Image (cartoon, rainbow, N blue to C red; front, side, top):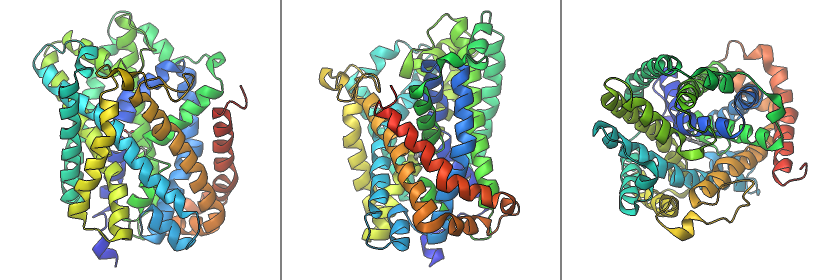
Length: 448
Ligand code: TRP
């Protein structure tokens, strides 16, 4: 039974695929602009605390549920609590995957556009580029198509091999960019903004943003780690694997901040510029350095690849559900799901100036999200849905399945988990659900 569902070829293969899912636009595009919006260094500290205290133990819970049931989120929950409404949490995850894929594909499309713009030597104006309706629609279609083609043909071989080559190159390139950015005159103010905390900037909204960013960046809260965990063998060490995934993901995010903030302050730009930060600051940085057009082009290729290993995982969750539970053929249903993601992505693609209605959609209050459709989708699926899903999943894992059963699953194959077994049980049952709950209450303005 195991063999027909598929399995990671090795522990490294699993760590790479899961890190590939985690590392993406969330680290290099979203993280710096969220840090910029939320006041810099103090946010970074809160973010890292949440990653270690909530993100890591929660990730273990999802992985354990997946490996124990060998199923997608809906199937995994159904196996433990048949015929209950808890299955709805699995459905929410499937829907959230589609929702994130739709707007994520738009931004991933822009990164592909920027590969060509950088190589051409004249990146031009970002606002003009993203408000051009035909271009952005074609780029979205292209990115969703490539994603679907890979999920269609089976993920492991190609993607694992590509990640092994491309991720280290990306890492080296980022190190070079850090050295360059830090050496720019005037970059010190950026380092201070990024590394010297001012705790007066912390309030409830900042903590919510940190939690949302942590779950988004680690690919948590919608059952992705249940799905990927379901392909892990019993003899693998989930505990150390999760440690590596969390470490790599945080490292890449921190490094991206070390490039962007020094460069940003050196060129006198505003850290609160929001979603366009990376597309404006990076090209400017490249165009001022030797061989900038080539290095910039390569950088955006790698960013596209990082985004691709994430969109693959986002598409894999609804596909795995439809194949496992509804008995569709993977090779056909992939195109249907991809088509839906494309249609759902269109309003986001057109919301950056191309279409007035979607650019000023404004259904969600201004204090929570910008009025354009893409930002609103990002809030609903990328922040709220992940936090809400994680709250329900942590209650399910901690209380319905049982934290002890989950911990026993993690302990199987792990050398060191025994030492933190009891702490993890307490985290899973009390600390994680309570923290998420309080943060969600704050979302509805109860503490403001
Ligand atoms: N983690 C990815 C990023 O940082 C985005 C992503 C991929 C994701 N799969 C996910 C987010 C599943 C939440 C859930 O770019």
